[in-house]
Length: 330
Length: 246
Image 1 (cartoon, each protein chain N blue to C red):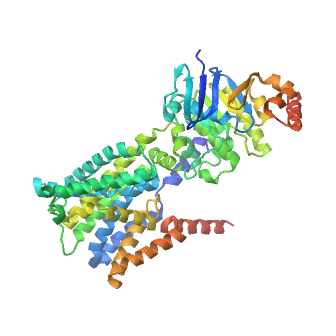
Image 2: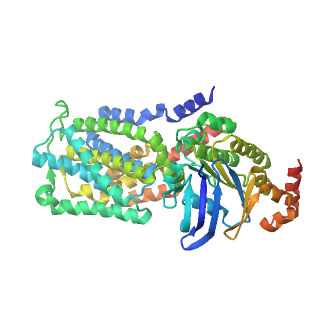
């Protein structure tokens, strides 16, 4: 085997689609048929996966620590809401394209300014950006509905898929399809040379400067891509729930995505899937059992994860698999 | 032809602290030089200053005749500087292949050519950076810098902490680079045997200044002077002499 062939084989092996990667999609399709009464929760899980996936791109791969990612989620949600409420634009796909573009624009402008900083300063500035947008939405009550919220109306997807507030089957399929498309985009990005350079930036930013990578430009680029995906998640949220409030721009929304990545594992592509499912199931079950103290249970799980599985559940799984492989080899 | 690298009265350091002072240095387009000195005399800072990692307090730095004193680090790399840091700084979550391509630019050095220089790496293409031994990491660090097709290669103590056999292998590769490559090389090295055997011209630094700039052969022959300049022990200077005789 020549060196070039060996290199091609090494790359293909690392980035090939593994059979295990089909599991979340098989489970998601199976849930559609097996658990029709849970499709509403399922749809919310899919939206949360998409939102957390967008955060993982900047946090897990590029190492950008942010607490203001809901700024883009909210921008996408309000883009769809404003189109529907004020321009009678109810077509869902183009609505999401506008949502992505609006969020990307906010990401590009804010990223260009904020990504000159890092650490705690960056953390606070991302939060401040989100708070500014929250206050803007609150202040522009005549446009956004302010505290009372904004109803959103959409047409059937491609004229075929109707949304029903009772069964949620249309919403679920629409969300699943979109998540799959966005996941393919994210997967392509993280396994591209651009994605490798993001990993390099996260692990050693000075070294990346020294190998000639335009670090800031790449950070702004990935921040913008991530913002666009978060915007799609926000737009999707607005469409399937048919209503949005200021909550889409809240710190709680941003923190939820962060908690999802802590639970599932960041920088691992599928961490968002595991984390979002676990978070929503925990929230649902704990709220049923302990309506007043459900957050205590969630906090306890987070503490356990922080103590015993710092790389989240997917990290724990990867470590166990590695141990198993080593034992099998020896 | 313009000098590959020129320091014109350069003073630099970290924050307000000045580490190297009034350095005047020029390296020819295909010249190789070696820099020696005790620990903490400013050798690494000199290389870091060329790369833009330090704060410039005075003077000018030129690369191939162009003033790069105010250029960002990545623009210096794009202008033609390759840097092999002392700590190797391999990206642990990337494979050997990905580490190499993360800073690759078109030119004479491509994957096939670096694997000719370091056949060890070709066998470990799919391994992650953190699965390599110290010697392999060092080879990868040099190979990564070469993939950027630099016109000036800065190497900071590449043999530090390596087993003697690996040092010999690296020495062979560095010799190949010096004789074959179309670039200037600045090697910082504490091991006088490696340093003085590598290039015909040597610089010795002390307390942030250049105190010797001349032929390496002169230092190899004059053990007392070498001892006085860089403080090597008697045993080490004897070995320098033995190597020369071999």
